[in-house]
Length: 380
Ligand code: NAD
Image (tube, rainbow, N blue to C red; front, side):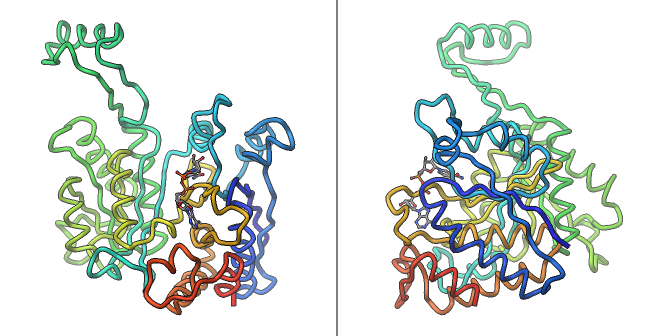
């Protein structure tokens, strides 16, 4: 079986981390499946490389290929200043309707962590990526738009809003929430995860965050009746995904106190933004965090760090995030044994304390290696 994967090199340290990551991904597939499975890599241009070749940062040919693609993976893209883009990443997410942002959080032995038992953390956060306060519907205090909206809220709806307020809108839909939860449940079932937790703030925001909770349970009840069991009925739950919900503030405590009770998390945009960074910090691994943004047709994996321009081209960047993106992609493809091979190899390499300079500076008695050498150690 040969699978096509589109890849974007990225700016800054993009070329450095790819040099290390791609051989690791190919070797994991070859060592696990021999000739029976392989990846056909097809490059797409974006960012500075695209601009140099075509005069555009996101050429139409790239977008067209991505619209028809199942799998893509990218290095970091810089934000072209004054070129009419808020961010290439945001443009890609919006244009391709990449509605689910997925971040796995797992600990690698030896990395510095601010918590006592980082080894108990093994979670995957599914964050809704298109709705909520990120929809960008916001009005500055004192502007005619804010005043009109406030007048309407006060006069027509009887809402108690201070006329001097800045106002933001938090749109959330059943469709948007359900497709996110469906995606998270599909993953939990396929990966035989122990639980799925809906995280929301429905005690305060009844119809938006409370809606998310309600719509989430609806998906579970209507579409996953055989594979899931509710927390309250979990007595005979062997082999099923236990589904529960937690209020967001309590969840921040829970993941510190009882991280082993949580496996897959599905949540709205703002909660997910906070929670995924807080969890990544617990395992000390912001620089090692992989991620994927998904639409209904495309899984678009991305290194979550930026272009790190000050170390670009110096063989100093940590390729771990992109390598782990590769593992996540293999898992998504169902090539789990190859993914496990990568996770184990990263574990061993970091456990041996042979790491790039960013990690070495946080670890006791570590040996510093370059970007490519780190990749070679993982590939061995
Ligand atoms: P950054 O992640 O590039 O850098 C922050 C710090 O982390 C720097 O000290 C950098 O040297 C270090 N760092 C980052 N990745 C590293 C790695 N793999 N190995 C070792 N050290 C690493 O963030 P920034 O400086 O805020 O952003 C730089 C550019 O990257 C901006 O144009 C920004 O828009 C873009 N950016 C892109 C993405 C993306 O494509 N997903 C994400 C964040 C930032």
